Image 1 (cartoon, one colour):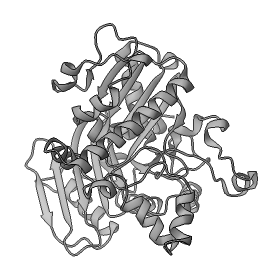
Image 2 (cartoon, rainbow, N blue to C red):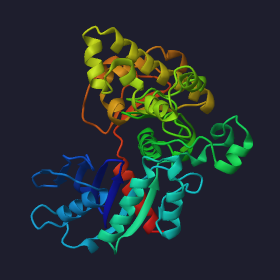
Image 3 (cartoon, rainbow, N blue to C red):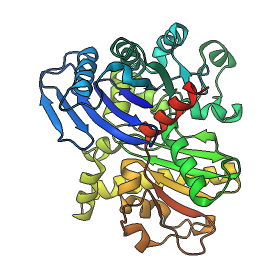
Image 4 (tube, rainbow, N blue to C red):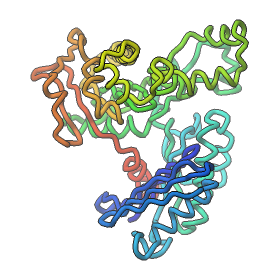
Length: 399
C-alpha cells in the first residue's frame, strides 16, 4: 500500500511517499517560495540522487503538478502510474469542532474545510488547494484529511472555553482548539510504548519546540489541555509569535500608538517572539549569540525556557500524576541548552535531570535524559508527523 502525504502550506508544499507494508519512505520533498520569482523544488527519492530545481512556481497547482511528474519520472520517480498511489493523506490545520478524527474527503468535508477558513486563513485555503489538485492528479486514490486540531478535541469544556459571553461560543465557536495535534499524538504513542505502559494508562507532558511551539497535557493517551488556543498565537514564546500576552496590550497598541488591526496582527504573529526580542528567530543563532555573551540573546533564552517551565508546572497540577516529560520537534530534539534551561530546578516536581545524558547524542529515536531513579522520566523523541498522517490515513481506508 503506497500512501502519499501532502502538507500544503501558505507558500510551500512538503510531501512524503510511504510503502506502508514496511513503513519505508519511498520519496520525500519540498516545494517552497510558491508565488515568488525564484521558487525551489527538492525531491529525494530513496536510493537515488537528490533532484533540485530552481524556477518560478506560480501556484500550488503548478508545484503539485511538478511533484507528480517527478514521482512518475522513469529515472527519478518511484511509481509507474498514478493509480499506484492508494491514498493521499492531507495535513489540514483546522477542523474546528466538526472533526475529532481523520476522515475520508468528500464534497461535504471540502465545504466544511472551506467554511473553517476564517479560523485559519493562512492554512486552510492552501490545504484545500492541495486536496483539490491531488484529487485531479491521483483520481483513483482515496483522499483523507488529518486535522491538526483533532487530537485536542478530547479537552473538557473547562479547558477549552474562554470566559467571554457564552453567545460568542454558541454562535461563533470562539474557544481554544489547540494545534500541532499530529505531533503530540505521535510522540505520546511512542512514549507509551517506550515506558511499557498501555496508552490508556499513560500521562505525559509533550513539549513541541520548533519555530512554532506548543505544550500539551495528556491523560490516558488523550489531550486534556494545550497551550495554543483559538489560534496558534497563544501559549509559549515562539520564533516570531509572542505567545501569551495581556489582551490589553492590543488596545494600547491601537488606541495609544495608532496601530491598525492588521499591523497589530503582523506584530504579534510575524515580528514578536524570539525575533522581536533579539532580531533573530532561529534559535541556533540566538544560542551562538548567548554563548558569545550577548545579553539580549541570554534574556530571550531565559524567557523562552521560563514560559515552558511555567506550563510544565501548570500541567502537573492538571494531570496529578506524570509519567514523563517529552521534548520533540526541531528545538526540542536538538537543543541541549534549551532542555537544560527548562528542566533545571524542577526537582520539586520529581524531575531529576542528567546533564551528561542530555548532551550525549546516540541517534536513537527515543533518548532518556533523566537521572537514574527519577520519579518522572524525561524523554527526547523524534517526531514524525508525516508517518503519523500516513498511519491515520491507512486506519481510515481500512475502516
